[in-house]
Structure formats: C-alpha cells, structure tokens
Amino acid sequence: MSGTQTRPAPRAGRLAWKGLVAAVAASLAGTVGAADTTRVPVLVELFTSEGCSSCPPADAALSRLLRDQPIAGVRIIALSEHVDYWDGLGWRDPFSSRAFTRRQEAYARRLPSGGVYTPQLVIGGAVHLVGSKEEGARAAIETAAREPGGEVSARVVPGAGTELEVAARWPAGIQAQVLVALVQDRAVSLVERGENAGRRLEHVAIARAVSAVGSGSGSFSGRVKLPGAQGADRAVIFVQEGDGGRIHGVASVELGDRKQGRRHGSGGSRRGNLLADAARGRRGGPHGGLRRG
Image 1 (cartoon, helix red, strand yellow):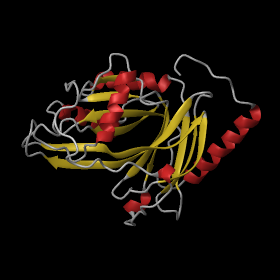
Image 2 (image 1 turned 90 degrees about the vertical axis):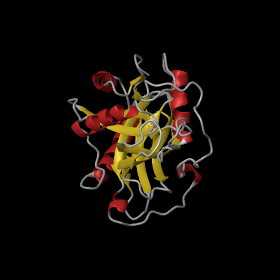
Image 3 (image 1 turned 135 degrees about the horizontal axis):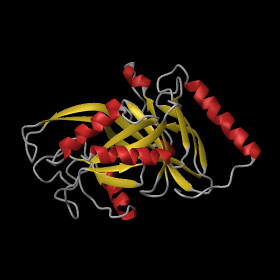
Image 4 (image 1 turned 90 degrees about the horizontal axis):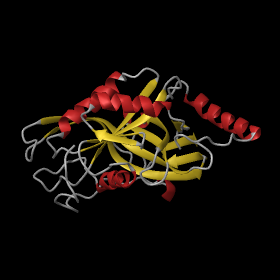
C-alpha cells in the first residue's frame, strides 16, 4: 500500500521472479502487444454513459489523454466503463453493463468522499474526480506513477487462440486479484433519444467485459483463457487489491488474432471465463443516488 514498505523477497525468490519476468518480456519482443518498459503504466478508468449529457466532454478528455500521453515517463492505460443506471432515462447505452455499475459501487464504498456519479475518473484505484477535469486528472496520474507498485507482463500465446501468458508481482503480503478487461479501441454512436439526442458520440478504450482470472499474495503467473473475445482489440491486465481497491500494476496487449481476421474460440476453463455484456432490459431507471459530476 501507499506509504508502507514491504520486506524484500529472499534472494533466490527475487532471482526466480526476475527470470520469469525476463522470459515473458523476451517472448514479447517483436510481437504484437510488446510491453513498454521505459514508462510507468497507470490505469485510468472513466465511468460514463451515453445517456448523460455531462459525459461527452469527459469522453473527449480521456481520448486526448490516451492519444497524447502527455506525462513524461508515464504510460496511460485507459478503460471506459459504461454504467447502466442511465439506461431507463430515454436512451439505452449499447456499451452499458451492470458489471461496470457494480465496479463503480465498489469504488464508492472504499474511496474517500466517493459516490456513484458520472462522469467519474478513478486513477490507479486510489483517487477519484470528475471525468472532465483534465488538469486534475494529469496531476492525479503523476502522483499515481510515483507510488510504489508492481509489475505485470503479458503476451498472447502463439497458436493457442485467445490465451494469454501472464506474470505479475506486487508488494509482498498484499492479497490481490488479477483481472482482465476486453477492450474495443474505438466506437461511434448516433444517439437518438435522451439527454444526448441528435449527438454523434465518440468513444475510446471501451471495456466490454472485466473478470478476475487469478489471485495471489504478492505474485501470480500462469496462462489465462479469453473466451468471448470476439470483437475485442486488446486485453488490459491489472492487479487490484480487494474489491474496489488500489491497482498494483497494469499492462495492455493487442489481440493480434482479431486483427488478422481469425475467429477466437469460446471455450475455456472456469478461471478464464470473462463476463459477457449484461443482458439488455434487465434493469431500468436510475440507480440509487443518481447524480452528475
């Protein structure tokens, strides 16, 4: 956690870990999704909705942060998570999912002065702010990059369909989950009803599903299957402490099979299953205390 120090791993353990990370990193060289080892990755999550008229400026701000990468020494990895509690107010967001609403609620329970609102940015799982406050977001990202964290390396396993090889390490003694988000890089919507009626909305880094694929206390390594990855452009792999806790490392890998037009398989182990998009019409109307940022 921030402000604490952890006991160094025994020398043999450190050497074994370095060998594991080196093996994964070496296999990444020259392939799709090669890791950027020169910059500190920071996960930036935007909770948004096409039904919210305050959200398009935040969507545009996230797009600029992702495109410009304006902070020296930092790599911004983004997830745009469309919540479902606006869906009953005139326009059903085609990217919305109850899973993302639950994720936002988990943050609200843990973050100081938290709450469920849109647009909301969460930086590194530790700080939240109104999604359109771009300068504040930059400052929070710089702070997150200075915090002690972990490392995540991942690659698509050649010839294995939608399967990743993942190696992650974070401060010893911290129990955390390894999660994978399936991401669509870009999308455009023509909104017909609701607060944004008549508007053309552009989105980036749209999360289509997020699921836990493993857990551990300080480290995780193994292969993870990605059934349901059809249509996804990339996978974002991250380590998160508890439900709605701090992020301890993140990586992004392009799913090259899709770009080459090959169809992904849909089977796999229970551990590797990813959440499908929430069924439409399961829930309508505002959720809890609906408010804007």
